[in-house]
Length: 538
Image (cartoon, rainbow, N blue to C red; front, side):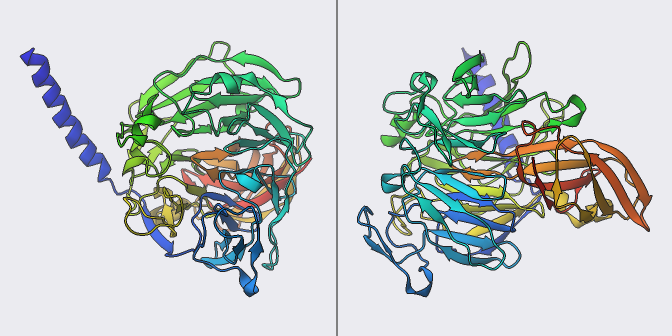
């Protein structure tokens, strides 16, 4: 018995040294943009007007930002203030780092969101008087736009549900607390029962809220809940495929892992679909956290090609355990895992040991060399934090409020009102000689054709890619509707002195790229251009 114990001690010592070394990595940099935004960013999404919408719940009580012009919201259903003169939503201007107050009328706590083809944000569900609400925000350039609402727009109360934009420009709304069903928005066709959600629900824990949704290349919907996944023909309400269970714990709220669909490639006509899921918590972790016992989060990522004839999960270890980590696709087609904690679960003060260092993940690197621990933030981002990719390639981070109200003293992790940005390695000025800059681009592109991209580059192109990116709606570690397509150029001509012209094939159909606003990035030898907006239209 002495030998195994000695080996265990040596392994633990080596692991500790390794973890200290990777946690001290310094790739990239952080910058505080707004010290006090007034509202904590429980939900966050990027608009085509180069602004970011962030909002919280309405029944916390006072925020630290007043509604403009002396306005107040009268709501007898509000559990904190029936006359509420405070903002609970904001619009952040990327260019100026300034905040504009917005007015949300019904309780948006733990709601969900997606964009329609015209760029309108649709936010569905929430808590209390917002559980059946649909909120709309159409971006504008003059700062006059605000949220509008349909209080009874949903057929079922949806709290902790997930959204996915569909090829026909409708939004499917899946699940929610005690909602084992789905429906469509903005115009609902009524409730459609989905027993899979009932079957994956754990008593007194749930662990299947905010299910992960990904639109697959056959037009069906991949749904992951707790540890199980299916492919759903939502038109006929038929499960067309059942996938192997992902063992080891739960990955959905409140165990709160995260998921991305890895980039889709033109070289296979966008048919190969691979899903990645990282982090989460062991079964039973939520009840243990309620008793002040904070177990280690899961330290694994799993990948599965859901279009394979015989799919299976491929497991690999992260540098450390992680719960409540957000996952973003980067212009380089790498994945950033950011925010969260190493112990516990989502919930009020239910996590410990903040994960301050993001992980950069390279999907095409050899197994064992895919992860890099990058520069750490100094601000814990735990429960109710969010993040989005900006057009210039930075990652915007905000929120964190593991308290049932705005609380700044006397708790392990106070409410966080700051907004900061992380600049990944690819924004280093040392790469500027390789960096393209888009000079001209069509405002709209259709399906099954080509479009022109004009760009400058100080050297001859060596490895140019054209990437179409649909921004995420981020909340509770769920990046809804995030999507990246790597398009195929048919020709590239020009010189560094005169500039370059590329003809690029558009997506083939609305299954590959549902209509809407996308960012186009031109990436040369790993250095991405700033993103330019283009609208994909039917």
